[in-house]
Length: 307
Image (cartoon, rainbow, N blue to C red; front, side, top):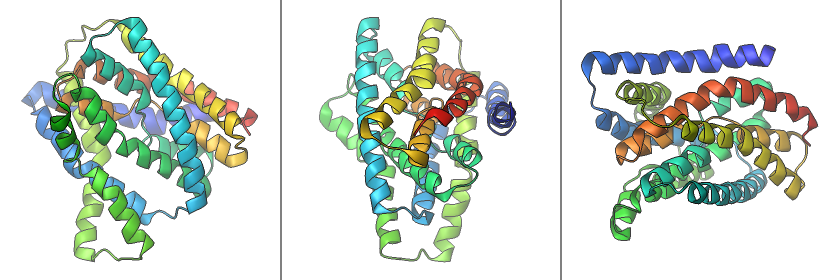
């Protein structure tokens, strides 16, 4: 019950308030959502990624183990979604939106506080979550951009779009600067820090603006299917991969928990930026965040049987 209350008070209610503010602002002022999405992709997301990787203390061994887990987990989840979207016979736009709503999950502003709550601020489990967050930031800016554009543009145009995403350059830059102990001058680091602090608020406001602009006319079955796959099948598959690789202890628990969080805001940002089923994406994020109160609490309880 304590986990349920904490998740409700410290995750769901604050997120919901920020989303509601976005809805209200959209109804009052009719904001330009494309501008908001560009701010998220080209400014706030790269800043928060650089800051977290530059300040982290990741060991090479842990990174390799987590990356192996993530590669297998992501591959299996992707194959599962290919079966689902083909069985459901979705159109190309809806196919990528459904896929992205399940394979991209909120590994930053939801999963990191959750990790610190469940594991009582353990730096080892936090380092595991940061690696997952890095991959979940890189993939939407590469594969995610490709998936929402593949049916609308030729390959060269899609690749050119992917190469404009700052995150794909920020990640190796942060690792190189941290690895070689290159200091960031304070006049540069202060703006990076301030911009990164605005990431969560701006992303949630963007979701609220999109929700405030919707007609809510999609089939509920599609949204519920996305929620079930993300919140229940996701962590179950993560547990299977942990067993497959023989991972035990705190690492196993942290990896399973990392798979249990709701749909990422990046799926909405992609859908808005590239005009690809934005209404479905927004509904999937909002509903999975609310339902995660129950699903994540269940996963936390079951962690005692992991590892």
